[in-house]
Structure formats: structure tokens, C-alpha cells
Length: 259
Image (cartoon, rainbow, N blue to C red; front, side, top):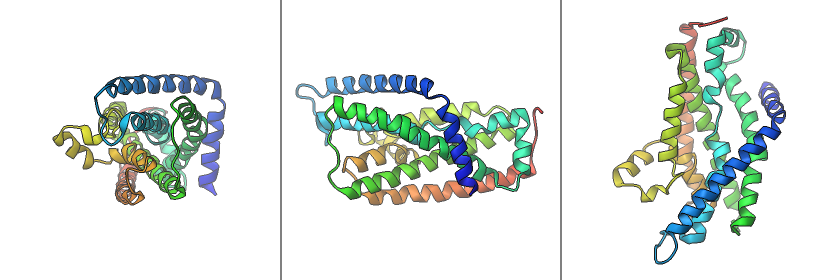
């Protein structure tokens, strides 16, 4: 099966850089400690932290920081911008496999790697340091896993569209950073969405970003029912259609900058 082959090769490629990725884990964990310390300071004394409370806020920050590697830190443009620059994109389009399927399959291998070598180590570290509580209902784990899969897929689709944009703009890296900035603000990473100003909260709820971090975390913490993933499913279907249309347009307009 081609999907399994491409995903396995991407996973194996990442295994060669485990030492470097260990440093990423240390830095990511350090950032999480900083955020947790800030919220601990804000939640001290008579200051309330809404439905979360002090310990709940620590859990929110810990899970958010860990799932970043699964749902948000996707390869910039799925590597398509480099393919355009080198001319490799022409070869990819000639293959008897859909371009979106190729890029998506490779990225799932990286997502699996980051789940095992980044998400689990970071969250286990936080679990013991912050004395976090685990959900007691088995269904919560199932809904959370489904929410994370859909979140990863949405992120893959967004980055695929960023990558194919290089066919028209040559340089699509700035799209990646715009997307990164919006995701940090509108996904509930820095602050739970219910605490945002009303207008910004409305913008966030109308975007796919809450399904990347906010809703998976809320499901895991049992503040949301798993049925909220239906919204993520709608975004997945919508993005799939857009990616297929974009690929069709790419086949009609191919401008190779190198090779």
C-alpha cells in the first residue's frame, strides 16, 4: 500500500535525527514550564481561573504544549515549495499518484514520529512534575484521539495549500508564518478562547484553528463532549475538496523555477 510505504519512509527518515529532536523536546518543555509559571502566578491568591482552576490550567497548558507537535508543527508547505524551486514538482505531478495523496502520506509518517518521540515524552514529563490527573472514562481517550487525528489532517491540508501556492507566488513561506501566527492566537494556545474579547472569540470560532488545540484539549479535560469533533469533520471535508481543486489547478499551471 503506497500510503503505508510513504509514511514509513518519512518516519524512518526522522529516526536519523533523534538526537536533534531531543533538544527540541527540551526547549518545548521549557516553554511549557514558562507558560505554566505565568498562569500559576496569575491564578495565585484571590484570582480565579474560571472553570479550570489552578490545577486545571496547568493541565490545559501541559496538554496544549504537547499536542503542538501533532496538530500544529507540520512541515512548512509539506515541502512543496522546495519541490517547485528544484523542479522536482514536475516529476511528482508526472507520477501516477495524486500529488495531494503523496504529500499527505509522507506527512502522516512525520506526525506518527512526533506523536511517539515528542508528544508522549513531553506530556509524561509534565504529568509527573505537575501531578496531572488522567481522564477516568475510556470514551474520553477515544474522542481525544479522533480529535487529534482530525486536527492533524486539517493542519496537513492547510500546509498543502500553502505549498501549492508556490506555483503562483514562488515564495510561499510567508503564508506559513501568517498561518502560524493566526494559529497561535486563534487556537486557544496562549489563552482559552472563552477569555478572548468577544469580537476575536467570534473570529476564532468561525475558523478551523480551535479544532487544532482548543477543542482536543477541552475534550481531554472533559469540558467538552466528543461530539464537538463533528465541526472538525466538516472542516476536513471542506479542506479536502479545496485541496483537490487546487491540485487540479496546479496541473494546468506549472511554472518550474529550477531544475
